[in-house]
Image (cartoon, rainbow, N blue to C red):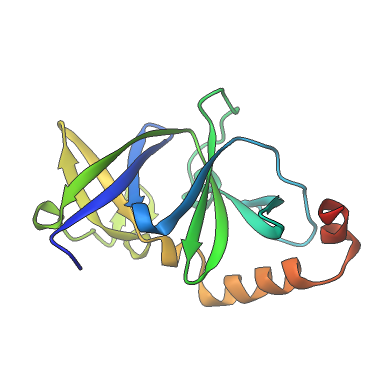
Length: 163
């Protein structure tokens, strides 16, 4: 990894997170997902992005944070996670900035209820902790396979949003 990286900083609840800018395909205004059946509660459904069906993860629910209403600042991040696209709903996108990887501290095994496996590390910025998210680990390999089958199936659930 390079000593310097660009990161996109975003807020979920009162916590600050960031992801490498190369792991984020796009930032979209919030749009409700099309619900699908038989998925974990933290998957709100799917959306169509560039003619592909993308699963949408409520990152608040995924990281076991309390639910909140959407606002004008709510955004959907399209992550490039392990070679496929996954959308994540966040409360706000704050900025794109430079990260000196030398300031990155290893993640603890558990941080505010969030398993350290989701994080590359933690950095202090302007007196606040910013958790650098590992986009490839938002979904486990098993979860990824289940979702790939869901979005690739010709079922009426996904066919409806493809129009």
